[in-house]
Length: 322
Image 1: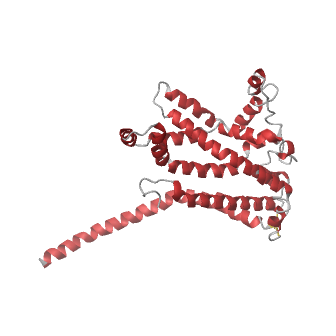
Image 2: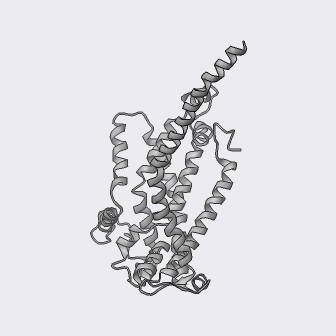
Image 3: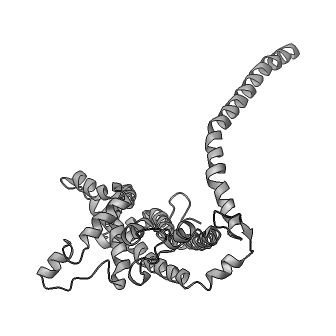
């Protein structure tokens, strides 16, 4: 017996060494494969982020070396009327766009989830605008919203209704940009559609047996079962809407150092004003301070949304997200 035990131990030793060597080689190759991605992140993401944090405490105008000024850039924000104007414009856009985007995309996804003839064609038509570049969309809508000959105002004039000056009236500029942004909701609709069609049919059948009508099934099954996707889209849309830039730049800015963004600076979004300071006026330290203020605000809002999810987001595998 003792001889057999010694023989078994001697046989298992080479196998252990083989698996140890295999694990080492797998680990080594794993690190080699992810090294380019790690280096790219350190050089092109983390490095510039940390550099902007340092520059936010300096006076840096590209052509001159950075000069340390402490918190002056942050204090200067509090006395900058245009900065307050950009905050006001951005908040107005966020408040209008985020709920509009979620409700519109969810409603379209519900319609697209119907099993009707030609539904694949309808889904393709709804998704197509999302593949159009932002610049092209802005140029198209600049023509479409023209108050004199645009196709949006023409039927309004024919019907004798008031025709808004979409891109020249300060009161209509933000609603116009929200409308243009809603045109490219294809990706959001697609994600909602996948979530809605993924709800188990057995839940609806059980509800029908219990006498639940369409509204009750939508309220007590569809919304809770897709609440995690609604939460995800809420986070994504809040973050992206605070960083809106392309549409406003194409529609209202002719050059980076232009002194205005639409009539009464009605399209002076936060990122647009930050871009103007960085590349129009070459105040890169000041622009870095603006970027870090925006980062902190978005982080706080994101944290609040994550904190609130336990009250309304349902996770099937984790017992309601607790």
